[in-house]
Image 1 (cartoon, rainbow, N blue to C red):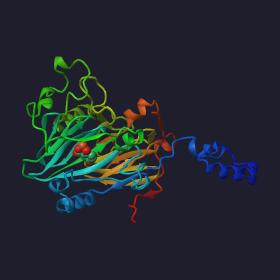
Image 2 (cartoon, protein in one colour; image 1 turned 135 degrees about the vertical axis):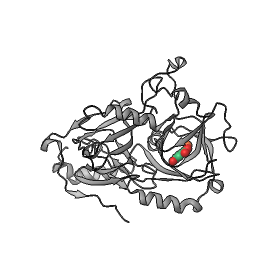
Image 3 (cartoon, rainbow, N blue to C red; image 1 turned 120 degrees about the horizontal axis):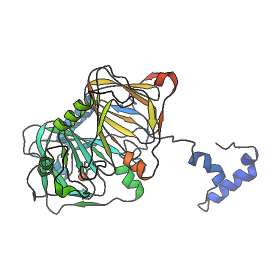
Image 4 (cartoon, protein in one colour; image 1 turned 120 degrees about the vertical axis):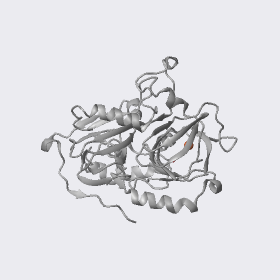
Length: 370
Ligand code: GTQ
Ligand code: FE2
C-alpha cells in the first residue's frame, strides 16, 4: 500500500480532493490503496446458519406466505452479515457472487413457472413427491438429489405428494445483478404443461458413465437431475483410495455432454469426509457455500471454528483459509463461483504451509445478533 506521506495529507492536496468531488470527479492518488488491495479482502464474512433456525423460520412461514397468495416461492435466503443488507450491491447475497436459500413447498401447492437470466441449482434436503417442471420435463425430487435450472429455461414447482418438501436453492443472483444482465419473465400460465416424459433426462442417463449417442455435441442441460444413489456410489468407489488432503473424497456434478460443470456459472460438489478425517488448510479465490447433508464435524475458517451438523449452512468467503474435520461420517454439499472465477482467469489456490498445514484455532463461531 502506498504510504500517505506528509505532502499528500497537506491542505493544498486535501482541499483539491474535496473540490473535484463537486464535479463528480475523484483523485486516484487517494483511492488506489483501497481500490487495489494486494490480495482479496472480501466483505463477505465466514458465517454459519443452524438448521434449527432455518427449519423453524420455514415452519413459521407456512401460513405467512403461500404461493397462492404471493404468486411466488416460499424461499428464505441467507444474507451474509458482511454484505450490505438491502442495498443493490449486497442484497440477497450469501457470498459476493452467489445467493442461497431454503425453499419449502407443501402438498397441493404450486410455485408458478417463470424464467430468468440467473442460473439455479437445487439440492433436496427433505421429503419427496414434488416435481419441478423444467422446459417441459417434470422432474420428481427425492432427498439427496441435485438438480439444475440453467439460465433461460422455464421452471415451476408443484406438489401432488403428501409430505412437506424442503430444498436448497443456489443462484448467481448477485453476479448477474452486478453485471447488469438481469431479465425475468413469468410464464403465460400458472404452470407449464409437460412436453416430455416424466423424469426423461435422468432416465436417459441412468447408466451414469455412458451417454446417449445423440448427446455427443454440447448441450446446456442434457441432464436435469442427478440422483443421490449414483452420487453416493461414485463417492464409495473413490473412498477405497487415498483422500485428497484438502477435500477428502469429493466429486463435482458435471454436464455429461461436455464434461464441464453441470451448471455453467455455478460449480456444485458432494464431498465425503470419513469419521476422523482432518484436512489440511488452503485458500482460493473462489468462494463456497456449504450445506451439511449428513454427519457432523467442524470447519476452521480464518482461525475460527465452526461446528456443524446435518442441515446447517456455512460460507467460506474468497481467499479465506479453511480446513475441515469430520467427527462422524459426513457428506457436505457445496456450491462455488469457481466457473465465474475461471472465466475471468482469476482462480488461484494456496496451501497453508506453517504448522503442518493447520491453522491455530483462536475463536469459536458465535452468531451475530442485532
Ligand atoms: O425456485 O425458481 O430461491 O427463481 C430464488 C429465485 C428460487 C426458483 C429462489 C428463484 C427460485
Ligand atoms: Fe426461478
